[in-house]
Length: 135
Image (cartoon, rainbow, N blue to C red; front, side):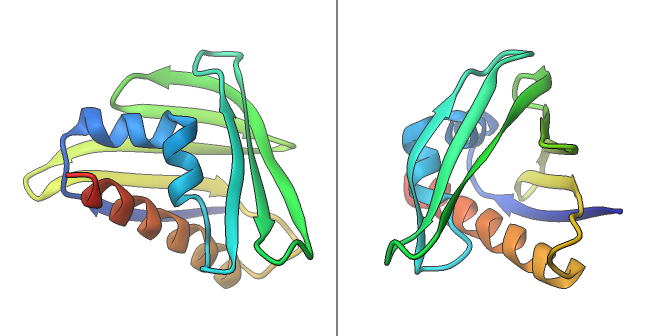
């Protein structure tokens, strides 16, 4: 099953793309709640290149690496990647009100669809706030 989340970011597409693909930016926005953070991130932005975003509870009680491999990159338009046995697509589309960012990913079986959608949407909302605060 595929799940889709999306947001609008009021910034130029070049700024949105850079914030989505730059480790220093990723560390600022990649968290689903205030008690989590991303203390480390690496990105090799090329087809076949790897990424790894270390996600941890701020109290140190748990953490995991969100890691994968880029399978398709169209600058300022689309990112596709695998992570484990799952895939995701991130689309960037210029709209009158800003840049639409849509993330579609394969659901996993541990958490409910609603939990997964809420978590990924919260991260995407943090992303939009981060980019817009940089302006």
